[in-house]
Length: 65
Image (cartoon, rainbow, N blue to C red):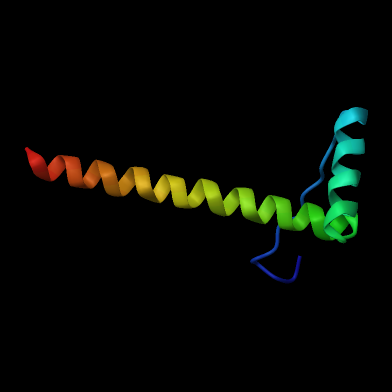
C-alpha cells in the first residue's frame, strides 16, 4: 500500500450477522463499505480512548503512594 496510514481489513460474518450488518448500513443510509469503515473506526477509537483512560488512572494511582 502506498499510504502508510492505511490497513486493509477483511470482515467475515455469520450469515445472520451479515444480514443485521446490511440492515444497519441501510438504516444509516450508508453503503456496506462505508458503514464497515465507520464501524471499525468508531470501535477502534473507543478502545483507544478507554485504554488512554486506564493508563491515566494507573499513573494517578501511582502518585498516591
